[in-house]
Length: 229
Image 1: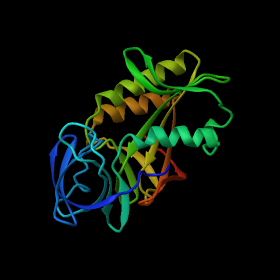
Image 2 (image 1 turned 180 degrees about the vertical axis):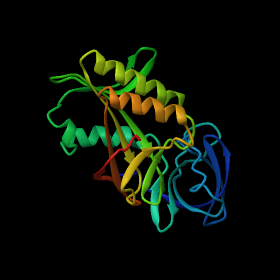
Image 3 (image 1 turned 120 degrees about the vertical axis):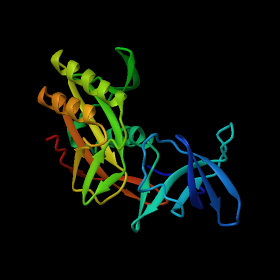
């Protein structure tokens, strides 16, 4: 997935709101940037951290969007919208083994009062939720880093889809390359960890992939195991 150009180097000052950060550009300009991610990301969004922003106003008060943060010698993606694009492109190119053979799918499908990211239609119907993860501790990718009632709801809906005879999967894209496994972060959200374990026991498929992140592109890299217990 190609990132927009150009990207402007910035230094983070602080998180201003749930969806905005304050930063400064190399020329001294003070910037108010959209942050497309509601996670805490406390280890990434530290004052003084380097970042890359796309300085195209979205309307409103922000002057651009923060996309990448430099952390421990690597670029980490902070845009939670990226997994949907990665999944769409990867299925289209046939590089995700569990989903090869699907040639038709719908995005943002309304189902039971919420939206499911993808419904793959060819053959056995498959519901898919694509998730972003960017916290990695000692090689363990942890999701979520803040409570997610929406994630709990998605796990329940996917389990119900399996009960009705469909396939269902939750797919994480870890927006960095140093994870070896992915686990639910029970300390941050025990309700989600329990819901995910129940969903897995009922047949919901769980997949996770690391990504190579550069200032030019985010590329799906390698599958890693998802461990729910």
